[in-house]
Image 1 (tube, rainbow, N blue to C red):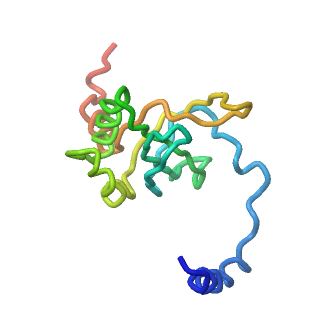
Image 2 (cartoon, rainbow, N blue to C red):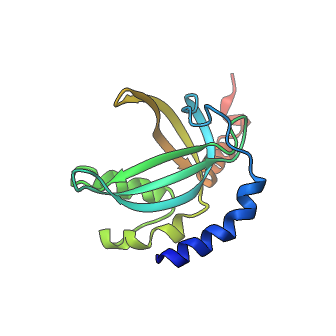
Length: 154
């Protein structure tokens, strides 16, 4: 992006900047451990410092006390991880035929709704969130409906 394009875009953001309050201190604190209903907010291909390629997915919590908070999950494309990446992307509704197809993953993954189980971990001296597992909301709702009240007789 050329400098004049950047300046033009910044000028377009001036009004929004002036009308927006700064985020509260502590807004980057990790979420408490638990299950969260989220939507995919963004998807990017990334490269790690050791040259691994990954798909970084940003989720936004859309219900409950922590609505509006974000959680990130990276799908690292190592030989060992590929089976899990394929499984997890399929859970979210995206099945790539080749690794190169991940270049087109953003559109199909955007706004997918999922339930994430979020935990916490220590990494480089800081506590951060870690997505332990997830399921698409439609699948969770179908399973709940299938396991109606009659299934739990005592």
